[in-house]
Length: 529
Image (tube, rainbow, N blue to C red):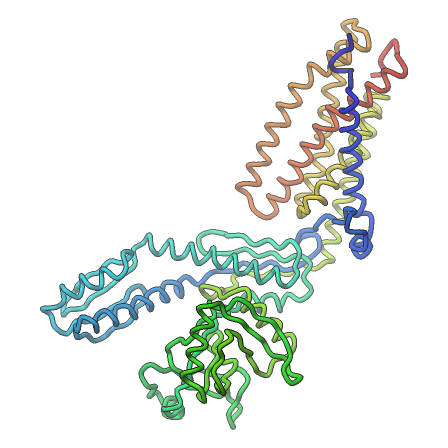
């Protein structure tokens, strides 16, 4: 009866050869230039290994979400609700406004102060209402509400940054949270880092307001701004002194950019413009606003500046429109990209910025290649010197292991970083551990007087459990590194995990298949190990 170790079913042989062939096919595009690889037919694997920031250059940004703006926006919304409720209850008040951490108001009638407190406390369950001396009411957000608001703002910012960067075509960006209110952005291989920074840094909060044509702009500029209005500068219009032209616009938002569902750069009368389209709710509001205010100016405000103030010539009922301005083609493209991606919930501050040149990455790749080749050569020489023909079989498995790692990284589109190269170099050494263990057990069995077939059978049987245990524990460590690590640590964990799985496959399947094939064909009386 054939031994279970030295016997290979045909399906197992086919499986081993198929896996090795797949590794060669997926790894092969890395031997071509990037344009040649992309020109391959779509039905062929044409993906190359993605190089990380430290290998191909790019930008590293550490951003901070300005959480104070998030809290202030929440408090300002609360102030609007407080004003409505107090007026509805006919409770007289003064000093309604926002401090750094609270919304405050003073009730003029002390006898109605308790009534006002109960009324305002019911507006938001996440607030604490305190009544002080002189009828002063203070509404503060709870600590939990502040934490949840900040966490939500950071998560939303990450998603919007990802949308904006994806639209620029940057491959394999790293966008992840760091701490409570910081975001790490790594953009490998970008051609225009300044443009990407501008796109990331803009809040892109767009609103539509009516221009206040009943009040004087010059009087407002002296400090007498009418209630319900505010002064805003124009982006592309200037006065006679070269300063930005100021507009007096109503604070009330007619339509918000949150209702936009599409924005595209286009041309109108040969000039770059941005066409936009609202959702159903936004389209109705926009149609109603333009119908009631035909003939008036409507200001389109982006991040506190007026980018266009066209006159409403007729009702716009289709839910779509055009933003005109002195745009260049690139500015029209960027504006439409920002509007499609959505507005950030709060401004972002750049805390740290680093630019890695491609030359440094090329040096790292060259050093990694040298380290890999030197390590591979030393291992190959050692294995041949120590185990002879069996060492050559192990070297064949080692080469196959390297091909499988390259193919897996290409197929998974994993990002290879400098620590990832270190993981590959480490894998070269680890890949032969299993073979060394098998060969040493075989040597022991030969010294005990076993026949070649029996020695190989016993060697594999004794080694297989140890091999699996050792590799599984290392794989668990790699998974933990990936789960709790970030950036370079993850790059190391990915290559280490892939290397562990491929080395287990080549040691327990490919080396075994090679030895069994040799054993069947030569039927040796002694083993060259």
